[in-house]
Image (tube, one colour):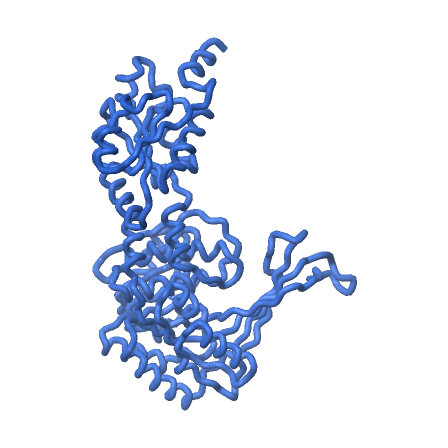
Amino acid sequence: MSADLIDLLQRLGQPRVLVVGDLMLDRYVWGDAERVSQEAPVLLLHADRREERLGGASSVATMLRALDAKVMLAGVVGLDFDGGRIRQMLGELGIDHEAVLADPNRPSTVKERYIGRAQHRHPQQMIRVDYEVRGPIASALERELAQIIGRQICKADIVLVSDYDKGVCTPGLLAATIAGAKARGIRILADPIRGGDYRKYHGCSAITPNRLEAGLATDRVIETNNEALAAASQLNEQLDLEAGIVTLDKEGIALAHRDGRRAMFPTRQRQVYDITGAGDMVLSVLGIVLAAGADYDEAIRLANIAGGLEVEKIGVATVTRDEILRDLLHGTGTADQKALPIDALLREIEGRRSLSQRVAFTNGCFDVLHAGHVQYLQEARKQGDVLVVGLNSDASVRSLKGHGRPINPIEARTLVLAGLQAVDYLTVFEESTPLHLIQRIRPEVLVKGADYHKQEVVGADFVESYGGRVHLAPMRAGFSTTNLLQRLGAA
């Protein structure tokens, strides 16, 4: 359920996060892919916009700032224009970059992406051009960076390592950083490289490889959830981790914890535009949530949501707490997410009310759904910030409507109602009236059809007793379930 995640999001505070890793500049050139060039069989891009964003470890830092964390960043840039641009952008974002050192012997890492729009829409990445040196940083620079990181660990609540294999995250630097974090009693999480040797991450609290990376590191082909969990467990044992975390793109995240927990955390299906930056987002959210004192389960569930929001955007993009909150509140709910037993529903409502949202309630059999029902539910939803529908059980419908009803069983009625955008939550009740349900939910607005008089509405006096109101929604003429069934019978 989302109520606990809403509560978690609201109490994150502003943890202090130290990010160590490979800094990059992501440059985007946007335009219309108008035609094939006359010079060669390639698309011609008519460029109309240029954009720069921070990438790599600096992308993680940017994402954390968007999530309201206090961020320190450690890494290396070149003594060049692009390095100066990276420093400038970090300063504008309020990211502490005291530990960002300049190396005159290597260029700043730049990834330049060309994004083409077909017929002025549907942007797609056409090509990426990389400027980089991948060799390890010089030993003198490594020692200097390790000393500064050691001082900054004393001010951090958690350390994140964003290793893109560009030369900053040497075994020596990581050994010093891991030892420093352990000495301070704070967690250190690493997003590792793609490769078979993960010894330099030994002693981290957790690592977050994706499916391919985890497979290479454990000599496995990961195709099933059980294989992902086995790989996470193997990484735990080999690297003395607190938690092995394997990200599985659209299939979610696998967790194997030192205490024996093994769990899969599925993600919601999304419209994926660009997977660039999804791993950075997962690392960022895991970091800020764990730094705030939450457990891995909660951190992974929130990271799943943020990662899903990130892939709906083009390129490496940030996600804010407000965006996550809106997704929790208004995300595409399935029947399983919307149809809740009363205790779970009350927890959801509590989360909504903590955000000053008003609850509207209505009830009915909703046996054969028609246009009148849809219009009525849309009107009910307008009366509050969230609409709860009390749905009569099959036995309750029979007691009210007689033998032969409902036409559609509760599973079918629930599924159809959950598909309506106007409906936020459903709960089934067995009684002939929803009075007990209303007394537990205590809606701000009680909605019933205008074919009732207010004194006939069950629960009206109770709702008005604590300052709530009753709204009689107009009914669409010519539509009723009884008439519809009669017409169907005649046909």
